[in-house]
Amino acid sequence: MIKYIITTLYILSFFLISTTHAVDKLPFGAACDDAVTSNGQCMSGDCEDSTKANKNNNDNYCDCDEDRDCNIYGKETGETWDCVDGNNASHDLDYCLSSKGRIEFPIARTDSSPTDAIFDPEVLISEMREQAEKPQTKINIPGINFSEPEVITEGDTTFLVIPYLSEYIAQMYKYSVMLAGVGAVLIIIVGGFQFTISAGAADKKEAAKKRIGGAIIGLLIAAGSYTVLYTINPNLVELKNLKVEYVERETVSEYMLDHGHFPGSADCSPQNCDDYDAIFKAYAPCANVDWRMLKSIAKVETGCNPGCIAGNFIGMGMTQPKYCNGPFKKAGYEKLNYVCTKQKLLDPNVGVAAIALNQKDAIALAKKYCSNASISEIGASLYAYHNTPAAARLMIIKGCTDREAFVSYYLNMSQKQKEKALNTTAYRKKFGHLLQKGQDGKFTNESMAAYLRKIGELKVNFSFSKAGPAFEKYGGNINNPVYGVCKLDTSNPF
Image (cartoon, rainbow, N blue to C red):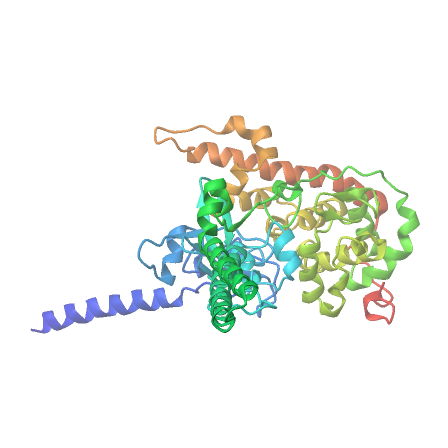
């Protein structure tokens, strides 16, 4: 009996421990610690960085990693879920989209104007559906009841089907026939009355007959118009719904594995960086760093050209407008993020301010962990952070010298991130020869690791070979005292 009780208690304790462990896993949308090392915190196994700051003073949240992760939202008959790559509207977090058009975001999506929803290729189909609001007609037609827009897929193409116009025309036709019928009946009644009271007046009888005959002919035409039009051309009576194709544009951002861009992708005429020293000095206090560090990043990135544009990357620091808001908000300057537009980022003041705020966290980490590193190594790490923050963070924590820490980010990416790397044209052209398929038709783990390693080495080696010398040239030291007030804190921030 005692053995039975002990065995039962042991099994129950194991069950409770396992249950507690499962409960500790964070759900979708919960803030997690680090996009690289904290995947185990999330029930989906994917902690991903976003463009929205959270309560943990970072921008990492749990989101879906595989299609099956989305099954937590339940399934109707015949419904399937897809874990879809994140975009601007979802704060760059992956989200769940069902075959019936239902959508679940990890966190509240960004607000978009109706114009953005139509012309921004990164806005979700669900947002397009919501923007296609039922019209409020100026002429009220009795009985009209507009259907909801529908998302359909034909082959590899997705469409948003908007039925409003066709339904409005169809109902207007029915209503017009009804009105014609009522009008014809009234005319026939009036004609009959005129015929009755015409007595011996032959001309009045004849006019009444013509009126009745015309009404009958008009009624026949109205009632038979469908047949007449169909006989002429069947397409005249086939009312088709408006189909809006969802197009996902390919831009320079394809060459990214995170918020940064392909190193050295900007091709802009270099400027004299000394001309902008006053601007570098004005915004260096915003990051608590020697102004020459900002100058070095601008030199490597665009040759200090404030008018540089490469796809979605704008200005002296090659900043994407959609990723500009995050650093401003995180640094407490959310009220100033109105400058995060393509036009305003061409202003050298805005471009340098964006570099400074983007570097703020990296500077703090470098001061803490890189005291024994050279200016070249620190500079390379800061530039790497400017382009690939998640990977560079690992290297900075290791003292700004461990390139293998940077590469490890790529080797430990989630499956969905690996698929992005596989589908990046620039990388496939350069390193695709390393990929080998096994008997199952999939790329072997060894060849995938070699492919991802080359990508990581390409980025980190570029930082050390190009950015490191630039930081040595302009001098400066991460531990130098910083004087002055951040210009963003003044009455004239730009």
